[in-house]
Image 1 (cartoon, rainbow, N blue to C red):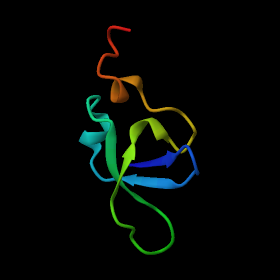
Image 2: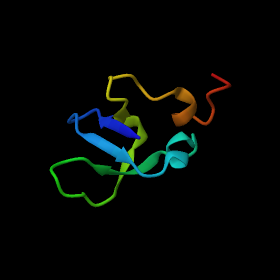
Image 3: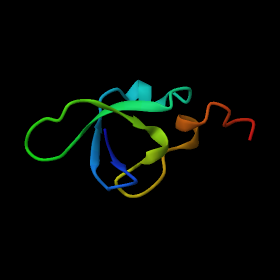
Length: 69
């Protein structure tokens, strides 16, 4: 799955979808899609990622207490 970094607009390839949809995890491992060479995996804060369309991630992916608010 590809997401976009809010701060610089770079495209991030998410390596583990289960980690992404886990609301307890604040970070997700991904690879910046920069240039032709495969970049090293890096941890990204989920709060700094959006879909390429600009839409925020679903609240149930980022907030473990989403049902009570």
